[in-house]
Length: 77
Image (cartoon, rainbow, N blue to C red):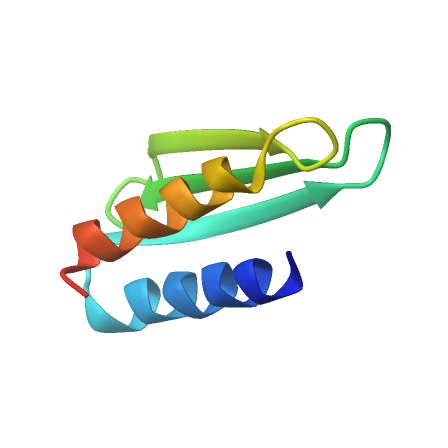
C-alpha cells in the first residue's frame, strides 16, 4: 500500500512539472473509511476535470492500481 501511495505522489508531481494544463490534489481522511480523494484541476481556470475517491478501508488495492495506470496513460509514461 505504501509503495502505491508514494508512486501516486511521484506521478502527480511529474504531471504538474511536465505540462501546463493540469495539476492534481490528493486528500486523505483517516476518519471512518480512510478515504483517499484524487482530483485533477485545470491550471487555466482551476475547474475540476476528474475526481476519484477510494476507500482504503473497504476497496481493493486494484482500484488504486487502476488510478495509477490511468494517470500514467494520460501522461504518456
